[in-house]
Length: 491
RNA sequence: CGGGGCGUAGCGUAGCCCGGUUAUCGCGCCAGCUUUGGGAGCUGGAGGCCGCAAGUUCGAAUCUUGCCGCCCCGACCA
Image 1 (tube, helix red, strand yellow):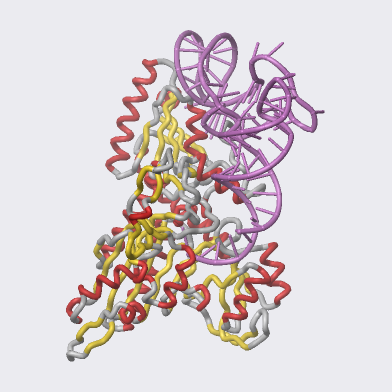
Image 2 (cartoon, chains in turn purple, brown):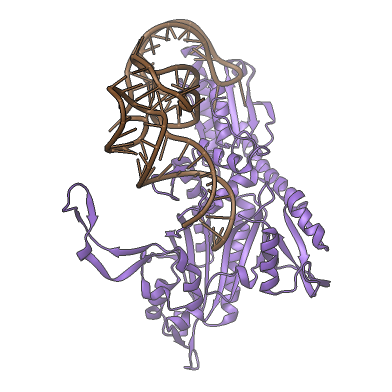
């Protein structure tokens, strides 16, 4: 093995880094905290993006694009919002460079200071609502359903590939509605889109819930979230959908006339998911030999490796493989026929395992003589010889099986890592031993939440939407509580 | 911003404490031959301002000072 991966058991964080780097997903860049998304990683992102984009359009949204730069004054219009983002904003102060008069190099031209500084968007609510003001006059203009695919910058103190970088790619939906009810409905609709995407495409089970006040988006009335559980027992927020109330409409004076010609502020939502999803996907399924990708998102679903000695043998294999790939193509299965003679089969096996290609097919001269092909699935490593007759359909079924199989495996792990806890001692212990979500009573106050965070590093991930109400006592303070919430250590 | 660590070939490293010919090894790279069913073998080859700058010295990868950069831990966060 020339590309060793640190085992999960030995060092989970290092395992994750090894995977990202060695599978060719991304690498560190010359800029601190920023990463280069490599072609294989970007191909995965494109598949995620395309599916999400399709789902957004299916639910009535249109794409648009707003500026990267936001006038500083915009950000301060909504008090909670500026409070939330002020500490991590990159600011543009000048618009020109010049040669250093004292010698070598180049300096910022002090003459070229901007009259109003520009913020590199950490999110686009402000510039968008400043625009919506001009787009919305009447209830006839509503609902306004816009999404944008963009990069944003949040100046993070500590970064991790995909999970937290200073610049990242995402989509942000921004909608305006005539009533609070419609906006809340939209917020939940998009949360469901994220949940469906996570479960059916990423094969990653999620818990839908609402955030506590403490964890809420800056400027939102309510923040809804999908929370996933990684293999190391830490939770990962994988998508958020916010009901913004009339906060931004008021801040940017966006009013509309209703049917009765009464003026009112519009109701807003925003929702986003980012390249962080790639980090989630990696940690949800992968193992010590590399990535395990769900067939529905894998850039390559099937890799085909020929094994031969002579050119004559190779020609026979080529011919058969052309037949097979024709049939795969007809079933819309993406494949790669890797007949690169500069790499040996064993090298290729290891490489595609590293890259998480769901199915590997190996056709050798011996197989051809017996009218079979060796088929190996990445998730379980199960290897078998399959008849070449009708092979494409077998592969199609196999891909479906892998998709549901890795979902079930992740769900099994998740379900067995939600633990009901009723004593503080047990709470503290389980966070270290069993990890995962702890379902516990909480008195509903921010003070208690922060105290728990301080003591254990666990935060309230969400209050599940389908929560049952029951009488209980807060895990820390013993004060009365009406429902359990999910605690976990998180990324 | 605090605490710790590290900068030697594309990558990973030895040498540094105790200064002394041509800077070590592995991977990768190039050429050729043999190979090809789990990261091939042999032979030959290319590749280094030892992070940068100054100092000490006959002589610095090695000692001193300053600077720069990165990584890890914490505070902040999707």
